[in-house]
Length: 132
Image (cartoon, rainbow, N blue to C red; front, side):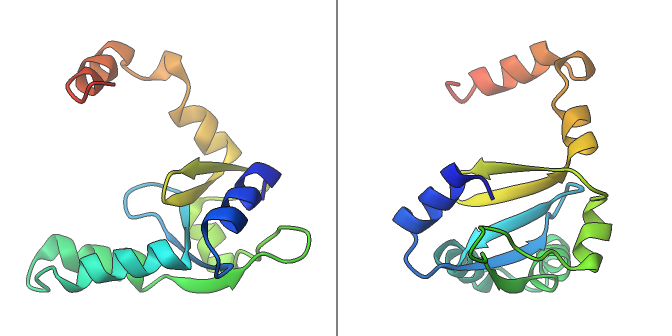
């Protein structure tokens, strides 16, 4: 874990506990501080279990979640099943995303963030609607 993200985790979240889970829609993993994970669980509790999308999220994200903690060197152990699901082979990219951290296989990350492979104009127009 990069030092800058460890610092945020230490300063903003007191428990030191994390939850690792499969990303719902990407070949990546999500790492939530316990406090953010509990907020997500509470949101999910309010949703109808009869909704197919909610059940997908429960099966994909909640069912794959495991508690973990950083070791003294700031590392976490990523189980084989999670690495396999995210397509993580060796090098990873760790990205802070406000309430969670994303963990990507480097080749996958490079592919999805390559500005020559996405429709930049479409993305700019979509983000402009949100004032970004």
